[in-house]
Image 1: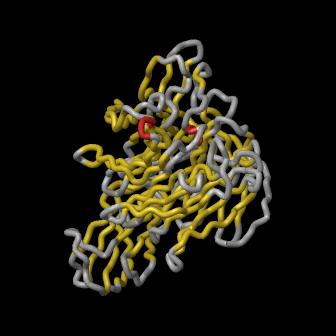
Image 2: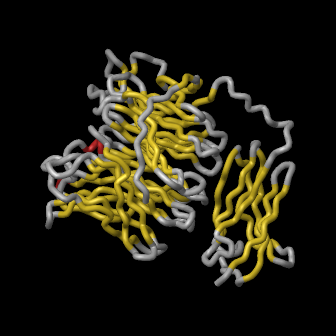
Image 3: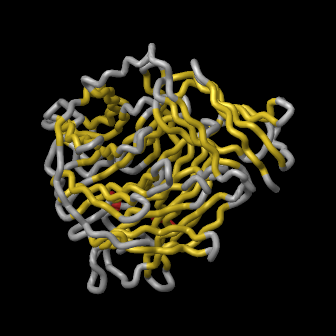
Length: 480
């Protein structure tokens, strides 16, 4: 990986988003930090789902059905934090989180799966002892690989050497494989040196983890990336940039070309760093302070970055995005009596690139705390493309494919999409997609199996993309 010259230029523009804000949950409590953790995820139909907790004493899952939030308890009775929620292609929810059992002096990293039968919880790994103070800066990170299996990046503590680790766990279809990604080189008495791992899988199902090494007596603040090298069967860690002053937390996304993009702190500012295939680049966006901040990144269908962040000293989470320049869209919450402090903020983009955000807040002068959901609509953007013929594109890689083939397609209007695999006789092998799809680039994976889950023989197949007005066909060669 090549080094880069940091050109740290603050660029900004101004744009507006109209936010529709709803209350998901409300309670009375004297502590303004009652809703510590949350995360939001959209299923394959763009229905929003969220997890959150009340004073870290439970995990609550909420689904928006007909403008009403239906809630259920995932787990309660211990101490929970570091939530991350994601949906797989079968519309099953996957949740990663820490569970702290003080009576056993043990911290567990857990995986929750919610299918049609409800929640199934399993312990993935455990650490004897306490991970450290400042638990609101800890997070786990979960993603689903191209095959459909979850992986989790998380922080663990080793009693034998008194070091904190960043670890990675991956479900192989039967159980969980775990590996150490990074070891702290020295011990700090209150918190680990490697913070805030953020995980994403590329098209080849290989994991990438970004994290931030905070300063100690021997280490300066450094933003690092860990890539798993399948050839040497090991994690390769490389520094991206020196991050003076509290670079955590970090949030990773991969472009349609599998290039990493990272939202993170830099000094007292919010920064965005990305790889273009040759070198790293960094934009400085705005000043955000160094305490009580949270950062979440999402890429839209054209690989443009959108960031929701909690700005130190401000009453509300804020939002920004970049097209040719950065647009600072201001606060999400319009009620200036609602105040956020030491709470999480989460972000997802739907198929039409509209943002969905969750956050907790405290009503000043009262004992009311509220967990909120906000959906944003960009103001002044012309979205009327119904009468224009869509431009579509279809590409396959690797082709020939050994274990399967990743399929990438582009449409420039909202359209019903069918993606179907046929054999050379014209017989349908498998329907990969049959739903309405938003504007932009999309990816899916054919695992070389038919509708019944049986592996098909090696040979020539055809992938056909249907939209409302056009069709594309590409030849796929499967080898065994």
